Structure formats: structure tokens, C-alpha cells
Image 1 (cartoon, rainbow, N blue to C red):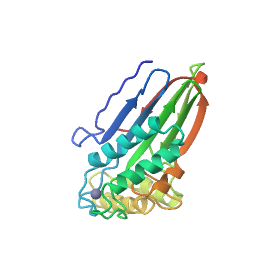
Image 2: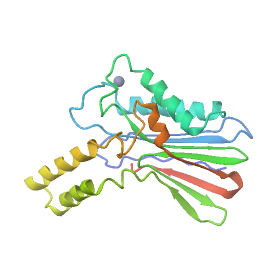
Image 3: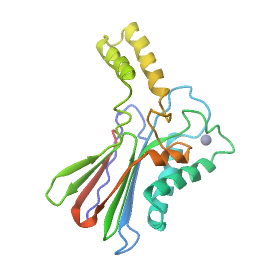
Image 4: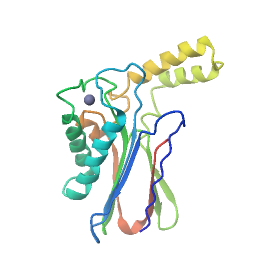
Length: 220
Ligand SMILES: [Zn+2]
């Protein structure tokens, strides 16, 4: 098996907040892949002094460990326990109910000789190649398929000239509309402090013999 990891910020002017790891616990035991894309909070966001890398290192570490040490747990359960464990690491000092508490997108894959299990939460992607070379994308489309009124706001922003005051006003309205849907019913979900978000992830399982390669991707 060949494994490659590569990471690069989406914008060179901003820090890279991705987390990636692969575990191969022992020969014949299969392995797991963890990929998180930390959600960058807006300037002036309050509620938690911990950084996004602080959060992703803890959540990613927990997912890597639990996915290979607790094969009795489903990936949804692994994510729920990982979120709880990370929340407990700062629950006594921070306001974890803040909508911009540190959070991340998640791709989690676990395999053994029999099967390949996968989980995707929010807008990172998992590609799975089959024996015939066909590639299937596993996506959580909630962020891409926001309600029509919010998509209309986005189209309005894009139609206005860059740098104009009108565009700034429209962009703020769009941003506020998206934020109102963050970890909210009928909106989109990230791994933050509420373990029930794990139940919103897109999950599935394939026979190991039907998978020749997987690729997990963030948008940088
Ligand atoms: Zn904190």
C-alpha cells in the first residue's frame, strides 16, 4: 500500500489549518485516515482563546486513535466520542455554545481486509476508486445546497463590482445568512463541540475488494 500526504494553505497569506494523518496499527489490521479542515473564525470572534490548530490537533488525534483502537465503534460513534473528548479539554474554561467555537470539516476512512468504512462531514471531499477505475465522490452537500434565499444572496454578491460599497453590504448580509445556518437545523454541520453533529455525517461502507484507492481532499 502506498500512502501520500500533502498540505498547502488555500491562500498563501493565511495559515494552513488542515490536519491529516494515517494510522497503520499492525500488519493485517488495516488502518485509518483522518483529514480535518479547520474553520477559520472571523476577526473579533469571542468565546474561546484556543486556536483552530489547537482544536484540530486534539480532535484529529482522538479520531486517529479511536478509529484503530475501537473497531467495535462505528465511525459515527468514533466522531461523537472524539468531539466530546475535545470539548472536555476546554469546556471548563470556554463558551462552547458560541457559534464560532473552534470547529472543522471531517473525512474519516477505516479499512481492514473485509471492508472500507467512510464518513464525511461538511465540505471536504472523499474520492473512492473502484476496480474498474471509476471514481466516486462522497460529499456532504449541505453547505453547497443552502436554501434558495441564501443562494440568491450569494448570486447578488457575485454580480456586484469588486471593492464596491454595495458589494460589501451584500457580502455582509450573505455571510450573516450563512452563519445563521451553521450547526442549525436545515443548515449545515461541522465538528465543533456538540457530539450529535456526528449523526449528520454522510457515511457508508464498501467491500475492501471493490476499492483500489481513496483520496481525501480539503479546499486548502
Ligand atoms: Zn477553548
